[in-house]
Length: 367
Image 1: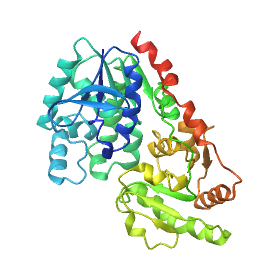
Image 2 (image 1 turned 135 degrees about the vertical axis):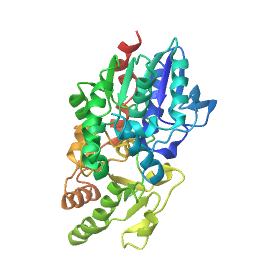
Image 3 (image 1 turned 90 degrees about the horizontal axis):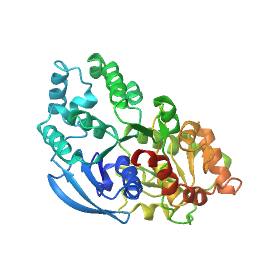
């Protein structure tokens, strides 16, 4: 029996890439154990049933534990004050300082009895450590200290966030019997096993536009949109390439008047977005850790991606990508795709990312 510890309820598809990954890993774990139950670090207090990709599981949560505090100044001040009397980094203290955390710890202690605990993502591993339960396997979505080095604000740096986080990350990653990483580069850095995510191919793309999907206000997305709608657009115009852009995600409607944008704004179903596009632009600026869920999601719909080399190598250097580092290279990649000079087969690649391949790597944990 497996207790699968995730960050939030798997049905909450709006909360980000962590759940996207866990929804695809759940059927693999279900095939390796007689029973799998899901324990969420945060979620509605109580027990409920969920059906995820054909797998029906019991899910539990102890109540609200805040996963993100950037817009809550009062809570941030509370966490900072707690760091003055605790050696914990912000990335742990932002959970442990709140009352709901103690309830989550007790819930995991009770559910871990007689089960193998598998944690997916940083919050789950922090919870397992606080509960003092053995962890059979951990799936690292990122190297958290790498992200902190790039994005930690000055006040947290003054509190020693980066060295605190490095120490805690090293200690926590030594606890599980097996550690897996989604990124090949992260696997090498963490001395872990690279774990491919099984995909569910949905067919070949039918669209002929260039797509971008993501919340416009998130800083990396804002920067990417600035490049796509500025220098990439200008270079395509200079080359005489006639191609339209489809933007999806909250806040992208502000770009509706751009000469290349034919659709923008939030979408209810990502399938509607991918039906319109033939190639996705997935830039990555700054530190390289983890994988881009958007690249994998696009591949499920048969859509190849334009992406930087570091991201391509993190997922699969031989995948269906058009590698580009600069704005000019992105424009050139779009030109090659639009002219038919380069048309990577994302459908075939996605078919090979199946659960059997992932299960082989996990099987030693559960024998």
